[in-house]
Length: 378
Image (cartoon, rainbow, N blue to C red; front, side, top):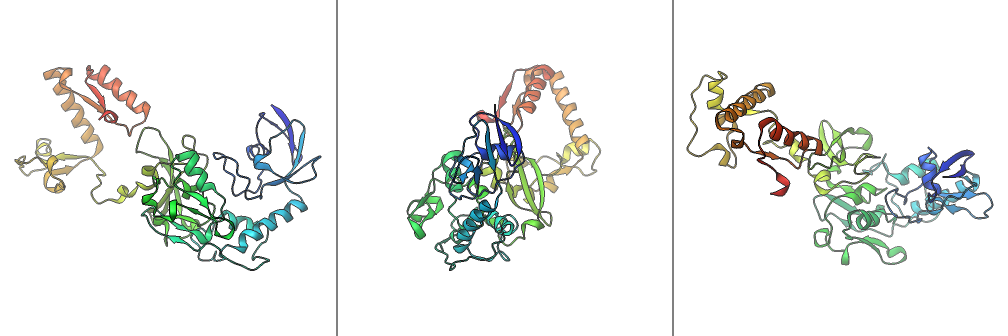
């Protein structure tokens, strides 16, 4: 561990840490746009400039390694001027339509422009990028809002490994592009949407988010993704009780700021009309239990083989206690009459490791059979 002082606060930090990391880990906020803790250092935005005692020039803190005894200032008149000038340059080629922008309230450029009092550019406003690409059902690429921070490119390359996009061109013609500016479907993009999550402006936005309200109107609900056993944290934005889009919550323990394609986009099943929300039992079984009076015979074609089965015609909705008691009784009866090897257990990849451990323990120790498999092998 080494000793540094940031804004007068003594800090002990591990060797090899940057000034940005030391500051953020100790509750000191240094303005930044291109920096992300899980991505390589870019140093492109220059908002994170700091002053170091003994050095004549301000330095970008995201790439500045801490040294023992280093004294750092993150706020000063000189640094404020540098940051105002940087934001001024961003604003000079960025549409000033925050009043109608979908990202208002969650845009880093808007946040820093407000904090440093930059309401308009000091030079002629000229938006160099006007490409608008709505070529896939997941996200929109609106290049006029892009500030070329490169976070989307680094996330695609370093986190996902898809390398579907890159910054191409020079000067005012620079922009983030797929090969030959083609459609996303023709690139190596896997549509995970991690580029959308790290984008600081409205250059990348979820299609499902378009026209559904402002960020401060959203209700946020945290949960755990149910698509596999990894246990990624996920956060849903709700408007009027409906899911608008999904993202990884800040500081998620397992997955950081990133999600897979299913986790980020595969939530429409929640409101699907065919989704089962309570246990169902066949009508003949319900008759045996005295839950219904009508006679019902199993049809020649099993309801399980029908693509869109008429649930009300073939099944009766029951409570969880009724369903679990029925399963327990039938399972115990089968084992008693035919022995434990007449039963097989099939575990699920959508459960956690702990849940699958309990399931195999139940099958092996409870039922008494090794007839056990897992859907991930199928």
